[in-house]
Length: 122
Image (cartoon, rainbow, N blue to C red):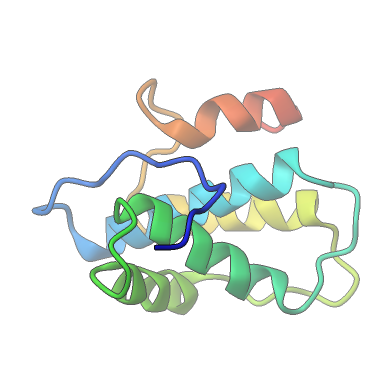
């Protein structure tokens, strides 16, 4: 069994609208981009990797059960990344997309809120 350094996220209620869950994943990616090297230019592969990692965390880590569907749904809702945009700037676009999906990332029980406040974007 492989270990991971990913911190487990809050598992969404199974009755949650899949689009809201996609927004939750996008907000978690935004929190990551805000706290980890926000002034660096977004690399083309970073969104794909981070969406997969956050979906994996959110699905409570069962490989190939839920995470793949969450990843696909989140990527379908993600905005296109303009060339040269920083990770922090793109995080703001991700939060707009998360909100459009119906996910309220500003609620008190929302994991990304604390990270975004640390990054100064909340």
